[in-house]
Length: 424
Image 1 (tube, rainbow, N blue to C red):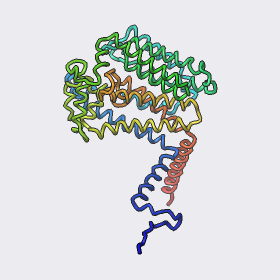
Image 2: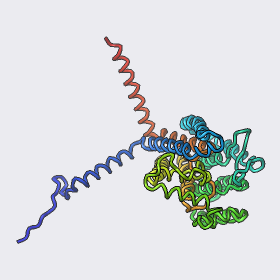
Image 3: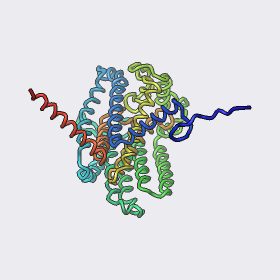
Image 4: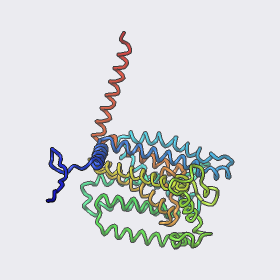
């Protein structure tokens, strides 16, 4: 006679006992879900991920620029000193942005867009050429990229317009005008300066915003075909750009010319392995890799911090995306919804373009890695945008109540401590 061993059942539910390992995993998942559901989660995720990215960026700018700084200026810290100055300006600006009332932010969107368009127009006529692109505007020893300022300005302006037209976005004309013409005007000025990379970023932001407001699907098909046609026609006017577009899949095909930079970027990434060669130990930054501290800093990061370091950076950007999208989903304010989505499309989209460029999945088009690459023109608007996201997160009703309760508890604790110290 055979006996059947039945699984143990719990006393309460009559279901099989999951066992200690599975029970521990379930408890961990429940704890993680509880933490993510807390009202201040988005606020802390934005602060933590942004702070870590900024710290990693400063370390990598110091490492990647040290050789270039010494060779050009005789001071290994010259570039990182300038980056620290921009951080010293950017952090207070981000703090102010996080405290600005929403009404004031929305009132500033049209003036900000106007200033950005004027700067882009000036760049077309009196801008400086750098690496074939006329996208810098110089005043004395100070040079800025107006297109970086325009990214933030046009995102906030489009969010304001869509928020005003919230109930009329089902009408195709209200959905298109004036946002699409505004984007086309800014993009046209950027294209006049031959900046293909920023053109693609503007196109990405526009497509993302049209998606979130519910544009018809045919819009995206037409838009993608139009963007592809513009990029190809834009590149056809420049032999070097066309070579980059046709050779980026195999940079070793034209190793000594257009493939030099992406090939050495791949060398850097491949030599980093899992954990990297160590901070400061990059070989490619000694002259073989052009723009090591700007557009190709991700390659140096991979060489020095390995696959673990590159994945950490990508995960931190995705953390910002998760927090911003959660904020956009839960908010009742349409401006906050559209601005949060636009900012995350801009920053994460630019990150993906830069990483794809370094991995030779996309052609080299001169796009910095937000918060990581050297450059105040890119860093300052990015920090202000993140400051706005932090401010949006603080204003959510649940987060505002939690912060107010924490402040009251802290004040009560300090008052009790003072009164206790005065008692005999």
